[in-house]
Image 1 (tube, rainbow over the protein chains, first blue to last red):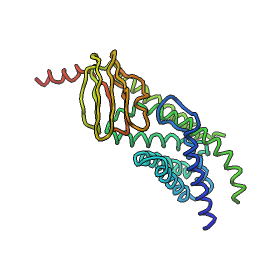
Image 2: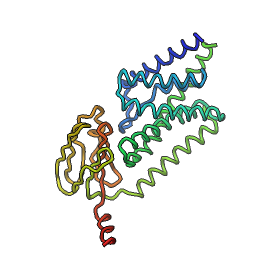
Image 3: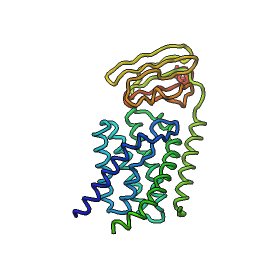
Image 4: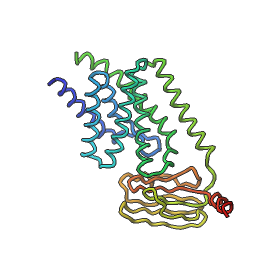
Length: 163
Length: 123
């Protein structure tokens, strides 16, 4: 139990640092709102190393804490929508088997963007934001792939350390 | 590195993105005639795209200055935290929008005569 809590706490802290550091990394598509999603790296790894419930709480706690520290109420709602949707999709795909970490991470990146866009459409009560959908789909694909590559490499080493 | 299902997923996402992009391109994309400003889902006002003008909006959400110039419309200034709307390029087509999310403001373009046709049919 104590070990579980310790791992969760370390991963939440790491995800928070990633959210903060991400702003410093120049990674621009020329479209507003596209980020690398470094914090998702932690969620993907947690999904593979820990129980789904633990991974989920790491994701939610990270979002809430980051919003309180650096963001605002609206930014928390966007992040939560993206975070919860992407977690659900990643968990379902992982359970369904046949996807590698790469596929899971890509699905997470894409669904994260879709979730945020859905909330944006509801907030402005206008369907025209869906104009961004194609760009955001491809962006999620690319960022998901990058995160997947790193997650795979990190996980191999972490598994040894945890056992 | 990739499994079979991963590749299927990647192709599916690319096809979906392509289809939506193609749909948006076919569906609309003509030069707009009227600039319509929506705030919180309600229409704030409509302005002709052909006439140069400056629209200043100050309300509970914040301040925005929208400029219509040379058949294009853009957000010149806004006091929102992210400034995405100000960075957005000028728009002139009916499928383009400028969104200022923190202020719940959307700038859209419409073609006038479509609605006139409806009116003449109704008469």
